[in-house]
Image 1 (tube, rainbow, N blue to C red):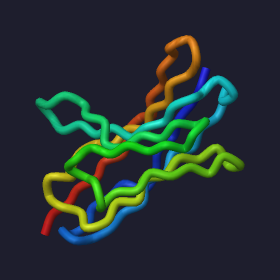
Image 2: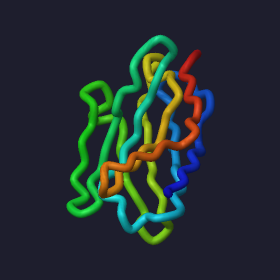
Image 3: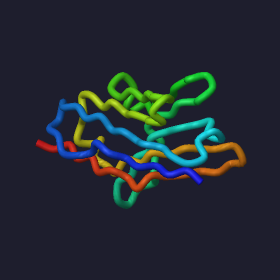
Image 4: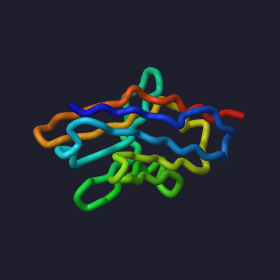
Length: 117
């Protein structure tokens, strides 16, 4: 089992920045992929950014490229999402996600991000 706890959400004005964090614990040795997703009511959860543990290769949704940066601190078992130049359409609940060998997937509880003037 893997436990994930997100933090760092909140309210910010358009153009502002937030940094989300995700603390991972449990059977971490089996994780090979980590990602951030977001979801707004009535819509499917979408992947915002991802990082592969072995290669550190990252991938971003077109809507956030150049504004968001995913990173991890392996020593502290932390995943981060730096969000700059935030827009109202970035408003959503953001979820931390990890995939472990054996196709096991785990989710955090989510953290609300609201971008509004």
